[in-house]
Image (cartoon, rainbow, N blue to C red; front, side, top):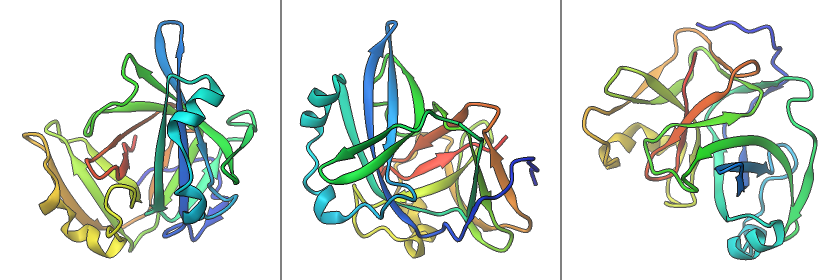
Length: 211
């Protein structure tokens, strides 16, 4: 169990839908991505999402590339946020209102592959409740990354109910395993004072590394 001084501000997050636009920019010889998301603004309507054009968005923003990330559903239970974690920039994409949530240092890769760590300055706390299931990727070094959100953008049939069997569908690198478990106690991932470490599987489900 990890503790935090940041209070839980939002509960009942599990199953809430959202979508993100990730815009990559070349800055000081490195690729830096800004994440815009619908979280707690709207539920990322599918008809509007289907009308998004990544190339047109990149041109309008002056980005080297844009990734349409989602739609997604949270598989965590609560959130807290550092005050003024990010400057509150709002932007509309094809009628979908989004807010800038985080900045990602991508190094020299605009689109890191699956099972590759990236670092996200998001200033947030994620709470996973005792008695709830978690879904984890475990690397060959024993580090366990807990799933924070499932994605239906690659496979629209993925649901939380199907995650128990996801391991059999993953083409994991040698030494990696997938597991599900029920938490005996609350799990807290606090990145208000640190940069978060995250990665995705090939279905673009997202995982975060606890402390």
